[in-house]
Length: 255
Image 1 (cartoon, helix red, strand yellow):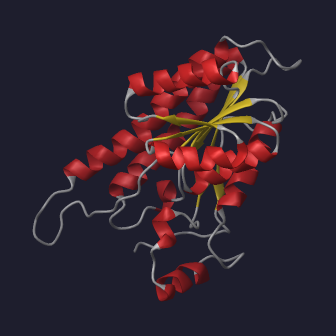
Image 2 (cartoon, rainbow, N blue to C red):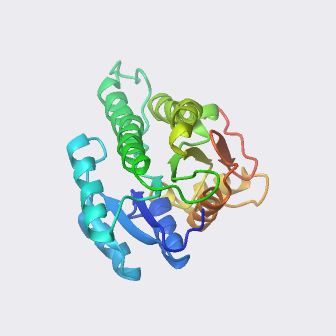
């Protein structure tokens, strides 16, 4: 599928990996809807390239359904490219030193990262299935989800985050198999340590330590590199039903 002229919807598009992906797809000629819980951030990114800003809560099915309706109305149809970047990354131990449990945090992270991804995937699949096929393969669209290397290398304090990202990774193959009948591909990117809002506030010494832990290139990943992989998934029809680690060969230590 060529990116040019296609409608793309990017969740979490107001910052980090999502913002970089929205900008990149727009540069490649896509009509991009920047979807974010923070409307001001979405407007800031969309305003850079004349895109559409949409405020939506990925954990609320009515909000997501409304977002797809706005995109169809304002951009002239359902998106053929959907990139799920919305997520949170809070950390907490199962039981802290004072004996407190992290059940509320676990529930919230699962709700945003895993359930939110599934809700967007569901509405994307329904919308894409109604589109005309694009080519002789019968392709209609592609959904790209975002996991994390933590789904395999989860560190202490990351039980909730790792579980949510592991769920996203596990969705990938069965979703791709199910949606194949409609010509819809599903793939997942599992980033390692990247320059995002989650790492922006780190002290210089911590940043240096994290960068040194990446075998090569010995630095944190750039959001643009995530965006480049997203484009590659869109344009290569054989990338389907798989989880791709984008991590410079890092394997996270226990802590």
